[in-house]
Length: 279
Length: 308
Image: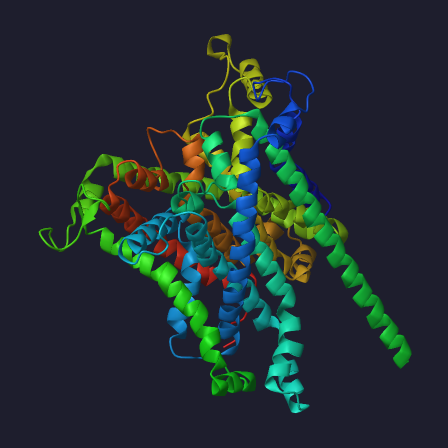
Protein backbone atom coordinates (compact mmCIF):
# COMPACT_ATOMS: atom_id res chain seq x y z
CA UNK A 1 0.00 0.00 0.00
CA UNK A 2 2.91 2.36 0.72
CA UNK A 3 4.84 1.81 -2.48
CA UNK A 4 2.33 2.84 -5.09
CA UNK A 5 1.65 6.39 -3.88
CA UNK A 6 5.42 7.10 -4.01
CA UNK A 7 5.44 6.46 -7.75
CA UNK A 8 2.22 8.42 -8.24
CA UNK A 9 3.44 11.38 -6.19
CA UNK A 10 6.64 11.41 -8.27
CA UNK A 11 4.53 11.49 -11.43
CA UNK A 12 2.44 14.33 -9.99
CA UNK A 13 5.60 16.35 -9.26
CA UNK A 14 6.92 15.63 -12.74
CA UNK A 15 3.56 16.58 -14.28
CA UNK A 16 3.29 19.87 -12.43
CA UNK A 17 6.92 20.69 -13.32
CA UNK A 18 5.95 20.08 -16.97
CA UNK A 19 2.92 22.38 -16.56
CA UNK A 20 4.68 25.24 -14.85
CA UNK A 21 8.35 25.33 -15.95
CA UNK A 22 7.50 26.84 -19.37
CA UNK A 23 5.30 29.46 -17.69
CA UNK A 24 7.95 30.28 -15.05
CA UNK A 25 10.60 30.50 -17.76
CA UNK A 26 8.41 33.00 -19.62
CA UNK A 27 8.00 35.08 -16.45
CA UNK A 28 11.76 35.08 -15.74
CA UNK A 29 12.62 36.08 -19.30
CA UNK A 30 10.10 38.93 -19.25
CA UNK A 31 12.66 40.69 -16.99
CA UNK A 32 15.47 40.01 -19.44
CA UNK A 33 17.59 42.96 -20.57
CA UNK A 34 18.66 41.29 -23.82
CA UNK A 35 16.90 41.79 -27.14
CA UNK A 36 17.27 38.04 -27.70
CA UNK A 37 14.24 36.61 -25.99
CA UNK A 38 15.89 33.39 -24.87
CA UNK A 39 19.40 34.42 -23.78
CA UNK A 40 19.78 36.03 -20.35
CA UNK A 41 21.36 39.49 -20.45
CA UNK A 42 20.68 40.98 -17.01
CA UNK A 43 17.61 42.23 -15.14
CA UNK A 44 15.39 44.89 -16.68
CA UNK A 45 11.76 45.97 -16.70
CA UNK A 46 12.04 47.73 -20.06
CA UNK A 47 9.70 45.28 -21.88
CA UNK A 48 6.92 46.23 -19.48
CA UNK A 49 7.62 49.87 -20.27
CA UNK A 50 7.48 49.25 -24.02
CA UNK A 51 4.28 47.26 -23.51
CA UNK A 52 2.55 50.04 -21.58
CA UNK A 53 3.64 52.71 -24.05
CA UNK A 54 2.33 50.65 -26.97
CA UNK A 55 -1.07 52.14 -27.83
CA UNK A 56 -1.83 49.25 -30.19
CA UNK A 57 -1.75 46.76 -27.31
CA UNK A 58 -4.08 48.95 -25.23
CA UNK A 59 -6.58 49.30 -28.07
CA UNK A 60 -6.50 45.55 -28.77
CA UNK A 61 -7.09 44.80 -25.08
CA UNK A 62 -10.08 47.18 -24.92
CA UNK A 63 -11.57 45.68 -28.10
CA UNK A 64 -11.12 42.13 -26.74
CA UNK A 65 -12.78 43.10 -23.45
CA UNK A 66 -15.72 44.75 -25.22
CA UNK A 67 -16.29 41.73 -27.46
CA UNK A 68 -15.89 39.29 -24.55
CA UNK A 69 -18.28 41.18 -22.22
CA UNK A 70 -20.97 41.55 -24.88
CA UNK A 71 -20.67 38.07 -26.40
CA UNK A 72 -20.48 36.31 -23.01
CA UNK A 73 -23.60 38.11 -21.79
CA UNK A 74 -25.70 37.30 -24.86
CA UNK A 75 -24.27 33.76 -24.99
CA UNK A 76 -25.24 33.26 -21.33
CA UNK A 77 -28.84 34.37 -21.95
CA UNK A 78 -29.25 32.16 -25.05
CA UNK A 79 -27.27 29.27 -23.58
CA UNK A 80 -29.28 29.30 -20.34
CA UNK A 81 -32.54 29.26 -22.32
CA UNK A 82 -31.32 26.24 -24.27
CA UNK A 83 -30.18 24.53 -21.04
CA UNK A 84 -33.58 25.09 -19.39
CA UNK A 85 -35.36 23.76 -22.50
CA UNK A 86 -33.22 20.61 -22.64
CA UNK A 87 -33.45 19.92 -18.90
CA UNK A 88 -37.10 20.80 -18.17
CA UNK A 89 -39.19 20.68 -21.32
CA UNK A 90 -39.40 16.89 -21.58
CA UNK A 91 -39.75 15.40 -25.05
CA UNK A 92 -40.76 18.37 -27.14
CA UNK A 93 -40.96 18.14 -30.90
CA UNK A 94 -37.54 18.53 -32.51
CA UNK A 95 -35.64 17.74 -29.28
CA UNK A 96 -33.16 15.38 -30.97
CA UNK A 97 -32.33 17.92 -33.67
CA UNK A 98 -32.00 20.65 -31.05
CA UNK A 99 -29.66 18.69 -28.79
CA UNK A 100 -27.58 17.76 -31.85
CA UNK A 101 -27.41 21.44 -32.79
CA UNK A 102 -26.22 22.28 -29.27
CA UNK A 103 -23.52 19.55 -29.26
CA UNK A 104 -22.12 20.04 -32.77
CA UNK A 105 -20.30 23.37 -32.18
CA UNK A 106 -18.49 21.78 -29.21
CA UNK A 107 -16.63 19.28 -31.38
CA UNK A 108 -16.40 21.24 -34.62
CA UNK A 109 -12.72 22.00 -35.41
CA UNK A 110 -12.17 25.74 -34.96
CA UNK A 111 -10.74 26.17 -38.44
CA UNK A 112 -13.98 24.84 -39.97
CA UNK A 113 -16.15 27.07 -37.76
CA UNK A 114 -13.87 29.91 -38.84
CA UNK A 115 -14.16 29.42 -42.60
CA UNK A 116 -17.88 28.63 -42.48
CA UNK A 117 -18.57 31.81 -40.49
CA UNK A 118 -16.42 33.88 -42.86
CA UNK A 119 -18.12 32.51 -46.00
CA UNK A 120 -21.50 33.12 -44.34
CA UNK A 121 -20.66 36.73 -43.44
CA UNK A 122 -19.24 37.47 -46.91
CA UNK A 123 -22.40 36.10 -48.56
CA UNK A 124 -24.58 38.04 -46.08
CA UNK A 125 -22.76 41.27 -46.90
CA UNK A 126 -23.12 40.58 -50.64
CA UNK A 127 -26.76 39.54 -50.75
CA UNK A 128 -28.35 41.09 -47.64
CA UNK A 129 -26.08 44.03 -46.98
CA UNK A 130 -25.72 43.41 -43.24
CA UNK A 131 -23.23 43.34 -41.54
CA UNK A 132 -21.79 45.61 -44.21
CA UNK A 133 -18.17 45.13 -43.16
CA UNK A 134 -16.39 42.62 -40.99
CA UNK A 135 -15.06 43.58 -37.58
CA UNK A 136 -16.57 44.05 -34.13
CA UNK A 137 -20.07 42.83 -35.13
CA UNK A 138 -19.01 39.70 -36.99
CA UNK A 139 -16.48 38.63 -34.33
CA UNK A 140 -19.12 39.12 -31.61
CA UNK A 141 -21.75 37.12 -33.54
CA UNK A 142 -19.30 34.25 -34.11
CA UNK A 143 -18.20 34.27 -30.45
CA UNK A 144 -21.81 34.17 -29.19
CA UNK A 145 -22.52 31.16 -31.41
CA UNK A 146 -19.66 28.95 -30.29
CA UNK A 147 -19.59 29.96 -26.62
CA UNK A 148 -23.35 29.67 -25.93
CA UNK A 149 -23.23 25.89 -26.26
CA UNK A 150 -20.66 25.74 -23.43
CA UNK A 151 -23.08 27.70 -21.22
CA UNK A 152 -25.86 25.27 -22.20
CA UNK A 153 -23.75 22.27 -21.17
CA UNK A 154 -22.98 23.76 -17.75
CA UNK A 155 -26.57 24.93 -17.03
CA UNK A 156 -28.18 21.73 -18.32
CA UNK A 157 -26.04 19.44 -16.16
CA UNK A 158 -26.69 21.63 -13.08
CA UNK A 159 -30.46 21.52 -13.67
CA UNK A 160 -30.49 17.78 -14.20
CA UNK A 161 -28.68 17.21 -10.90
CA UNK A 162 -30.91 19.69 -9.00
CA UNK A 163 -33.86 18.24 -7.13
CA UNK A 164 -36.99 18.97 -9.11
CA UNK A 165 -39.18 18.09 -6.09
CA UNK A 166 -38.33 21.52 -4.62
CA UNK A 167 -40.04 23.19 -7.59
CA UNK A 168 -43.07 20.93 -7.22
CA UNK A 169 -43.16 21.57 -3.46
CA UNK A 170 -43.14 25.34 -4.00
CA UNK A 171 -46.08 24.98 -6.39
CA UNK A 172 -47.96 22.78 -3.90
CA UNK A 173 -47.42 25.47 -1.27
CA UNK A 174 -49.18 27.94 -3.57
CA UNK A 175 -46.36 29.77 -5.35
CA UNK A 176 -47.20 31.16 -8.73
CA UNK A 177 -45.16 29.47 -11.51
CA UNK A 178 -43.36 32.73 -12.20
CA UNK A 179 -42.39 32.98 -8.51
CA UNK A 180 -41.11 29.39 -8.61
CA UNK A 181 -38.91 30.32 -11.53
CA UNK A 182 -37.54 33.44 -9.82
CA UNK A 183 -37.38 32.20 -6.22
CA UNK A 184 -36.48 28.53 -6.65
CA UNK A 185 -35.14 27.57 -10.07
CA UNK A 186 -32.92 30.57 -10.85
CA UNK A 187 -31.17 30.64 -7.42
CA UNK A 188 -30.47 26.91 -7.77
CA UNK A 189 -28.89 27.29 -11.20
CA UNK A 190 -27.28 30.71 -10.60
CA UNK A 191 -23.79 29.26 -9.84
CA UNK A 192 -23.99 27.40 -13.16
CA UNK A 193 -25.07 30.58 -14.96
CA UNK A 194 -22.15 32.47 -13.40
CA UNK A 195 -19.60 29.81 -14.31
CA UNK A 196 -21.14 29.60 -17.77
CA UNK A 197 -20.64 33.34 -18.21
CA UNK A 198 -17.03 33.12 -17.00
CA UNK A 199 -16.39 30.24 -19.39
CA UNK A 200 -17.91 32.16 -22.33
CA UNK A 201 -15.89 35.27 -21.37
CA UNK A 202 -12.63 33.28 -21.22
CA UNK A 203 -13.34 31.50 -24.51
CA UNK A 204 -13.95 34.83 -26.20
CA UNK A 205 -10.86 36.50 -24.70
CA UNK A 206 -8.73 33.50 -25.71
CA UNK A 207 -10.01 32.84 -29.20
CA UNK A 208 -7.61 33.44 -32.07
CA UNK A 209 -8.69 31.15 -34.92
CA UNK A 210 -12.34 32.18 -35.28
CA UNK A 211 -11.58 35.86 -34.58
CA UNK A 212 -8.83 35.81 -37.18
CA UNK A 213 -11.23 34.51 -39.85
CA UNK A 214 -14.17 36.77 -39.00
CA UNK A 215 -12.27 40.01 -38.39
CA UNK A 216 -11.92 42.83 -40.85
CA UNK A 217 -9.67 45.83 -41.33
CA UNK A 218 -9.02 47.74 -38.11
CA UNK A 219 -10.57 45.22 -35.71
CA UNK A 220 -7.52 43.69 -34.02
CA UNK A 221 -8.24 41.80 -30.80
CA UNK A 222 -5.45 41.01 -28.37
CA UNK A 223 -5.07 37.35 -29.49
CA UNK A 224 -4.99 38.47 -33.15
CA UNK A 225 -2.25 40.99 -32.28
CA UNK A 226 -0.23 38.36 -30.38
CA UNK A 227 -0.77 35.86 -33.21
CA UNK A 228 0.56 38.25 -35.85
CA UNK A 229 3.64 39.05 -33.71
CA UNK A 230 4.35 35.47 -32.63
CA UNK A 231 4.12 34.09 -36.19
CA UNK A 232 7.28 36.07 -36.92
CA UNK A 233 9.15 34.54 -33.99
CA UNK A 234 9.84 35.04 -30.27
CA UNK A 235 9.76 38.68 -29.13
CA UNK A 236 10.55 39.75 -25.53
CA UNK A 237 7.56 42.08 -25.03
CA UNK A 238 5.21 39.08 -25.49
CA UNK A 239 6.92 37.56 -22.43
CA UNK A 240 5.89 40.63 -20.42
CA UNK A 241 2.34 40.41 -21.77
CA UNK A 242 2.19 36.70 -20.91
CA UNK A 243 3.41 37.40 -17.37
CA UNK A 244 0.71 40.02 -16.83
CA UNK A 245 -1.93 37.59 -18.19
CA UNK A 246 -0.81 34.73 -15.94
CA UNK A 247 -0.66 36.97 -12.85
CA UNK A 248 -4.12 38.47 -13.53
CA UNK A 249 -5.74 35.10 -14.18
CA UNK A 250 -3.98 33.53 -11.19
CA UNK A 251 -5.22 36.25 -8.83
CA UNK A 252 -8.78 35.95 -10.17
CA UNK A 253 -8.88 32.15 -9.94
CA UNK A 254 -7.44 32.01 -6.43
CA UNK A 255 -9.71 34.81 -5.17
CA UNK A 256 -12.73 33.00 -6.61
CA UNK A 257 -11.60 29.75 -5.02
CA UNK A 258 -11.08 31.46 -1.66
CA UNK A 259 -14.49 33.17 -1.77
CA UNK A 260 -16.24 29.91 -2.68
CA UNK A 261 -14.41 28.11 0.12
CA UNK A 262 -15.43 30.80 2.63
CA UNK A 263 -19.08 30.70 1.53
CA UNK A 264 -19.01 26.91 1.88
CA UNK A 265 -17.62 27.18 5.43
CA UNK A 266 -20.23 29.78 6.41
CA UNK A 267 -23.05 27.55 5.15
CA UNK A 268 -21.59 24.66 7.13
CA UNK A 269 -21.52 26.84 10.26
CA UNK A 270 -25.13 27.93 9.75
CA UNK A 271 -26.18 24.32 9.29
CA UNK A 272 -24.55 23.35 12.60
CA UNK A 273 -26.15 26.28 14.41
CA UNK A 274 -29.54 25.28 13.03
CA UNK A 275 -29.10 21.76 14.37
CA UNK A 276 -28.07 23.09 17.81
CA UNK A 277 -31.17 25.29 18.01
CA UNK A 278 -33.35 22.29 17.13
CA UNK A 279 -31.80 20.26 19.93
CA UNK B 1 -39.11 11.36 -18.42
CA UNK B 2 -41.93 10.76 -15.95
CA UNK B 3 -44.07 13.69 -17.01
CA UNK B 4 -43.60 17.17 -18.24
CA UNK B 5 -43.20 19.40 -15.21
CA UNK B 6 -46.05 21.66 -14.17
CA UNK B 7 -43.69 24.58 -14.65
CA UNK B 8 -43.29 23.62 -18.27
CA UNK B 9 -47.04 23.26 -18.79
CA UNK B 10 -47.54 26.73 -17.39
CA UNK B 11 -44.80 28.09 -19.62
CA UNK B 12 -46.42 26.31 -22.50
CA UNK B 13 -49.88 27.73 -21.82
CA UNK B 14 -48.56 31.25 -21.77
CA UNK B 15 -46.43 30.71 -24.86
CA UNK B 16 -43.26 31.44 -22.88
CA UNK B 17 -41.75 28.06 -23.65
CA UNK B 18 -41.84 28.87 -27.34
CA UNK B 19 -39.64 31.91 -26.72
CA UNK B 20 -37.26 30.07 -24.38
CA UNK B 21 -36.80 27.37 -26.98
CA UNK B 22 -37.03 29.39 -30.17
CA UNK B 23 -34.41 32.04 -29.34
CA UNK B 24 -31.41 29.68 -29.02
CA UNK B 25 -32.82 27.35 -31.69
CA UNK B 26 -33.13 30.06 -34.34
CA UNK B 27 -29.75 31.52 -33.37
CA UNK B 28 -27.97 28.19 -33.88
CA UNK B 29 -29.86 27.52 -37.12
CA UNK B 30 -28.86 30.88 -38.58
CA UNK B 31 -25.30 31.24 -37.28
CA UNK B 32 -24.20 27.61 -37.10
CA UNK B 33 -26.24 25.24 -39.26
CA UNK B 34 -26.70 27.49 -42.30
CA UNK B 35 -22.98 28.45 -42.49
CA UNK B 36 -22.12 24.77 -42.17
CA UNK B 37 -24.54 23.78 -44.96
CA UNK B 38 -23.04 26.53 -47.11
CA UNK B 39 -19.62 24.89 -46.64
CA UNK B 40 -21.04 21.51 -47.67
CA UNK B 41 -22.58 23.13 -50.75
CA UNK B 42 -19.36 25.04 -51.42
CA UNK B 43 -17.41 21.75 -51.56
CA UNK B 44 -19.21 20.85 -54.83
CA UNK B 45 -19.15 24.38 -56.29
CA UNK B 46 -16.75 25.50 -59.01
CA UNK B 47 -13.80 27.78 -58.43
CA UNK B 48 -13.98 30.95 -60.53
CA UNK B 49 -11.83 34.09 -60.74
CA UNK B 50 -14.75 36.24 -59.55
CA UNK B 51 -15.37 37.76 -56.13
CA UNK B 52 -16.53 35.82 -54.10
CA UNK B 53 -14.36 33.20 -55.84
CA UNK B 54 -16.90 30.50 -56.64
CA UNK B 55 -19.65 29.79 -59.11
CA UNK B 56 -22.71 27.65 -58.67
CA UNK B 57 -25.25 26.81 -61.31
CA UNK B 58 -25.48 28.77 -64.59
CA UNK B 59 -22.71 27.67 -66.91
CA UNK B 60 -21.00 25.81 -64.05
CA UNK B 61 -21.77 22.13 -63.43
CA UNK B 62 -24.40 21.60 -60.73
CA UNK B 63 -22.18 19.20 -58.79
CA UNK B 64 -18.45 19.60 -59.23
CA UNK B 65 -16.51 16.85 -57.46
CA UNK B 66 -13.11 18.12 -58.56
CA UNK B 67 -12.16 19.01 -54.99
CA UNK B 68 -12.92 15.53 -53.70
CA UNK B 69 -11.16 13.97 -56.68
CA UNK B 70 -7.99 15.97 -56.04
CA UNK B 71 -8.21 15.16 -52.36
CA UNK B 72 -7.98 11.44 -52.96
CA UNK B 73 -5.41 11.59 -55.77
CA UNK B 74 -3.07 14.41 -54.74
CA UNK B 75 -0.33 13.24 -52.44
CA UNK B 76 -0.34 16.52 -50.47
CA UNK B 77 -3.81 16.02 -49.01
CA UNK B 78 -3.42 12.34 -48.18
CA UNK B 79 -0.11 13.07 -46.44
CA UNK B 80 -1.68 15.95 -44.52
CA UNK B 81 -4.48 13.69 -43.28
CA UNK B 82 -2.02 10.96 -42.27
CA UNK B 83 0.27 13.48 -40.51
CA UNK B 84 -2.69 14.95 -38.60
CA UNK B 85 -4.10 11.62 -37.48
CA UNK B 86 -0.67 10.25 -36.48
CA UNK B 87 0.30 13.42 -34.57
CA UNK B 88 -3.08 13.48 -32.79
CA UNK B 89 -2.84 9.78 -31.93
CA UNK B 90 0.72 10.08 -30.57
CA UNK B 91 -0.28 13.15 -28.52
CA UNK B 92 -3.29 11.21 -27.17
CA UNK B 93 -1.14 8.23 -26.10
CA UNK B 94 1.47 10.48 -24.45
CA UNK B 95 -1.28 12.44 -22.64
CA UNK B 96 -2.61 9.13 -21.35
CA UNK B 97 0.86 7.99 -20.22
CA UNK B 98 1.44 11.22 -18.28
CA UNK B 99 -2.17 12.01 -17.34
CA UNK B 100 -3.21 8.62 -15.99
CA UNK B 101 -0.68 8.45 -13.13
CA UNK B 102 -1.37 12.12 -12.38
CA UNK B 103 -5.15 11.56 -12.19
CA UNK B 104 -4.66 8.47 -10.06
CA UNK B 105 -2.21 10.35 -7.84
CA UNK B 106 -4.77 13.13 -7.36
CA UNK B 107 -7.24 10.62 -5.94
CA UNK B 108 -4.64 9.50 -3.37
CA UNK B 109 -3.65 12.85 -1.84
CA UNK B 110 -5.78 14.24 0.98
CA UNK B 111 -8.66 16.59 0.24
CA UNK B 112 -7.05 19.90 1.19
CA UNK B 113 -4.10 19.35 -1.12
CA UNK B 114 -6.30 17.80 -3.78
CA UNK B 115 -8.38 20.95 -4.28
CA UNK B 116 -5.25 23.09 -4.63
CA UNK B 117 -3.69 20.63 -7.09
CA UNK B 118 -6.90 20.40 -9.13
CA UNK B 119 -6.94 24.18 -9.31
CA UNK B 120 -3.34 24.08 -10.54
CA UNK B 121 -4.37 21.63 -13.30
CA UNK B 122 -7.15 23.97 -14.42
CA UNK B 123 -5.21 27.24 -14.04
CA UNK B 124 -3.18 26.98 -17.28
CA UNK B 125 -6.48 26.28 -19.04
CA UNK B 126 -7.76 29.74 -18.04
CA UNK B 127 -4.64 31.50 -19.31
CA UNK B 128 -4.20 32.15 -22.98
CA UNK B 129 -3.79 29.09 -25.21
CA UNK B 130 -1.70 31.12 -27.62
CA UNK B 131 0.70 32.17 -24.86
CA UNK B 132 1.15 28.58 -23.70
CA UNK B 133 2.19 27.64 -27.25
CA UNK B 134 4.47 30.68 -27.30
CA UNK B 135 6.16 29.58 -24.04
CA UNK B 136 7.41 26.46 -25.82
CA UNK B 137 8.63 28.45 -28.83
CA UNK B 138 11.00 30.17 -26.42
CA UNK B 139 12.09 26.93 -24.76
CA UNK B 140 12.69 24.94 -27.94
CA UNK B 141 14.56 27.61 -29.89
CA UNK B 142 18.32 27.48 -30.40
CA UNK B 143 20.42 28.89 -27.53
CA UNK B 144 17.53 28.74 -25.05
CA UNK B 145 18.45 27.35 -21.60
CA UNK B 146 16.20 24.35 -22.20
CA UNK B 147 17.74 23.50 -25.56
CA UNK B 148 21.25 24.02 -24.13
CA UNK B 149 20.40 21.69 -21.25
CA UNK B 150 19.17 18.95 -23.60
CA UNK B 151 22.11 19.50 -25.96
CA UNK B 152 24.52 19.20 -23.04
CA UNK B 153 22.85 15.97 -21.92
CA UNK B 154 22.94 14.55 -25.43
CA UNK B 155 26.63 15.42 -25.98
CA UNK B 156 27.51 13.88 -22.63
CA UNK B 157 25.68 10.63 -23.42
CA UNK B 158 26.72 9.94 -27.03
CA UNK B 159 30.15 9.41 -28.63
CA UNK B 160 31.99 12.57 -29.67
CA UNK B 161 31.31 12.28 -33.42
CA UNK B 162 27.60 12.59 -32.74
CA UNK B 163 27.92 15.82 -30.75
CA UNK B 164 25.72 18.71 -31.91
CA UNK B 165 25.75 22.46 -31.20
CA UNK B 166 21.99 22.53 -30.61
CA UNK B 167 19.07 20.15 -31.05
CA UNK B 168 16.76 21.16 -33.92
CA UNK B 169 13.42 20.92 -32.11
CA UNK B 170 11.38 23.74 -33.63
CA UNK B 171 9.43 23.34 -36.89
CA UNK B 172 9.02 19.58 -36.65
CA UNK B 173 6.35 17.02 -35.83
CA UNK B 174 8.18 16.47 -32.56
CA UNK B 175 7.51 20.10 -31.61
CA UNK B 176 3.85 19.83 -32.66
CA UNK B 177 3.28 16.71 -30.56
CA UNK B 178 5.14 18.13 -27.54
CA UNK B 179 3.10 21.34 -27.53
CA UNK B 180 -0.15 19.43 -28.11
CA UNK B 181 0.59 17.21 -25.11
CA UNK B 182 1.33 20.33 -23.06
CA UNK B 183 -1.84 22.21 -24.02
CA UNK B 184 -4.27 19.25 -24.05
CA UNK B 185 -3.06 17.37 -20.93
CA UNK B 186 -5.79 18.91 -18.67
CA UNK B 187 -8.44 17.50 -21.06
CA UNK B 188 -7.08 14.03 -20.32
CA UNK B 189 -6.57 14.48 -16.57
CA UNK B 190 -10.00 15.91 -15.69
CA UNK B 191 -12.32 13.18 -17.12
CA UNK B 192 -9.93 10.49 -15.87
CA UNK B 193 -9.91 12.03 -12.40
CA UNK B 194 -13.74 12.25 -12.41
CA UNK B 195 -13.84 8.56 -13.34
CA UNK B 196 -11.19 7.33 -10.88
CA UNK B 197 -12.48 9.45 -8.00
CA UNK B 198 -15.84 7.68 -7.85
CA UNK B 199 -14.38 4.14 -7.85
CA UNK B 200 -15.08 2.17 -4.68
CA UNK B 201 -11.83 1.95 -2.62
CA UNK B 202 -13.10 -1.15 -0.79
CA UNK B 203 -12.63 -3.14 -4.01
CA UNK B 204 -8.90 -2.33 -3.87
CA UNK B 205 -8.76 -3.39 -0.24
CA UNK B 206 -10.63 -6.62 -0.96
CA UNK B 207 -8.15 -7.48 -3.70
CA UNK B 208 -5.23 -6.67 -1.35
CA UNK B 209 -6.74 -8.84 1.38
CA UNK B 210 -6.96 -11.68 -1.11
CA UNK B 211 -3.20 -11.37 -1.61
CA UNK B 212 -2.98 -9.36 -4.86
CA UNK B 213 0.21 -7.33 -5.31
CA UNK B 214 -0.20 -3.53 -5.69
CA UNK B 215 0.47 -3.65 -9.43
CA UNK B 216 -1.99 -6.52 -9.77
CA UNK B 217 -4.65 -4.44 -8.01
CA UNK B 218 -4.04 -1.62 -10.50
CA UNK B 219 -4.06 -3.94 -13.52
CA UNK B 220 -7.03 -6.15 -12.56
CA UNK B 221 -9.22 -3.78 -10.51
CA UNK B 222 -8.54 -0.10 -11.20
CA UNK B 223 -7.63 -0.16 -14.91
CA UNK B 224 -10.71 -2.07 -16.21
CA UNK B 225 -13.02 0.25 -14.30
CA UNK B 226 -11.37 3.35 -15.76
CA UNK B 227 -11.76 2.38 -19.45
CA UNK B 228 -14.66 4.88 -19.96
CA UNK B 229 -12.49 7.69 -18.53
CA UNK B 230 -9.55 6.68 -20.74
CA UNK B 231 -11.68 6.71 -23.89
CA UNK B 232 -13.51 9.96 -23.01
CA UNK B 233 -10.25 11.75 -22.13
CA UNK B 234 -8.48 10.27 -25.16
CA UNK B 235 -11.13 11.50 -27.59
CA UNK B 236 -11.18 14.90 -25.88
CA UNK B 237 -7.48 15.17 -26.81
CA UNK B 238 -7.65 13.45 -30.20
CA UNK B 239 -10.58 15.39 -31.74
CA UNK B 240 -9.25 18.97 -31.32
CA UNK B 241 -5.64 17.83 -31.92
CA UNK B 242 -6.49 16.37 -35.34
CA UNK B 243 -7.99 19.66 -36.54
CA UNK B 244 -5.46 21.91 -34.79
CA UNK B 245 -4.37 25.06 -36.67
CA UNK B 246 -2.44 27.28 -34.22
CA UNK B 247 0.17 24.76 -33.04
CA UNK B 248 1.25 23.43 -36.47
CA UNK B 249 1.37 26.98 -37.84
CA UNK B 250 3.64 28.23 -35.05
CA UNK B 251 5.94 25.26 -34.35
CA UNK B 252 5.19 22.78 -37.16
CA UNK B 253 7.10 21.73 -40.26
CA UNK B 254 5.72 23.80 -43.17
CA UNK B 255 6.74 21.11 -45.69
CA UNK B 256 4.47 18.48 -44.13
CA UNK B 257 1.49 20.53 -42.91
CA UNK B 258 -1.37 19.23 -40.82
CA UNK B 259 -4.89 19.28 -42.21
CA UNK B 260 -6.04 22.38 -40.29
CA UNK B 261 -3.28 24.38 -41.90
CA UNK B 262 -4.11 22.96 -45.34
CA UNK B 263 -7.73 24.11 -44.97
CA UNK B 264 -6.63 27.56 -43.84
CA UNK B 265 -4.02 27.95 -46.62
CA UNK B 266 -6.36 26.71 -49.38
CA UNK B 267 -8.94 29.18 -48.17
CA UNK B 268 -6.90 32.31 -47.44
CA UNK B 269 -3.83 32.01 -49.66
CA UNK B 270 -4.89 29.90 -52.65
CA UNK B 271 -8.41 31.40 -52.41
CA UNK B 272 -9.79 28.02 -53.47
CA UNK B 273 -12.99 27.94 -51.41
CA UNK B 274 -14.40 24.73 -52.96
CA UNK B 275 -11.15 22.85 -52.24
CA UNK B 276 -10.93 24.13 -48.65
CA UNK B 277 -14.57 23.14 -48.12
CA UNK B 278 -14.06 19.63 -49.52
CA UNK B 279 -11.09 19.08 -47.16
CA UNK B 280 -13.19 20.39 -44.25
CA UNK B 281 -16.08 18.03 -45.05
CA UNK B 282 -13.76 15.01 -45.20
CA UNK B 283 -12.13 16.00 -41.88
CA UNK B 284 -15.58 16.19 -40.28
CA UNK B 285 -16.56 12.77 -41.66
CA UNK B 286 -13.36 11.33 -40.16
CA UNK B 287 -14.26 12.85 -36.78
CA UNK B 288 -17.75 11.26 -36.63
CA UNK B 289 -16.39 7.97 -35.23
CA UNK B 290 -14.26 9.52 -32.44
CA UNK B 291 -17.15 11.86 -31.53
CA UNK B 292 -19.59 8.98 -31.13
CA UNK B 293 -17.02 7.10 -29.03
CA UNK B 294 -16.63 10.19 -26.86
CA UNK B 295 -20.35 10.81 -26.27
CA UNK B 296 -20.92 7.12 -25.54
CA UNK B 297 -18.21 6.86 -22.89
CA UNK B 298 -18.32 10.37 -21.45
CA UNK B 299 -21.55 9.77 -19.50
CA UNK B 300 -20.26 6.42 -18.24
CA UNK B 301 -16.97 7.90 -17.07
CA UNK B 302 -18.66 10.14 -14.52
CA UNK B 303 -21.35 7.54 -13.76
CA UNK B 304 -24.16 9.88 -14.75
CA UNK B 305 -27.42 8.02 -15.26
CA UNK B 306 -29.57 9.21 -18.08
CA UNK B 307 -32.43 11.11 -16.40
CA UNK B 308 -35.00 9.91 -18.92
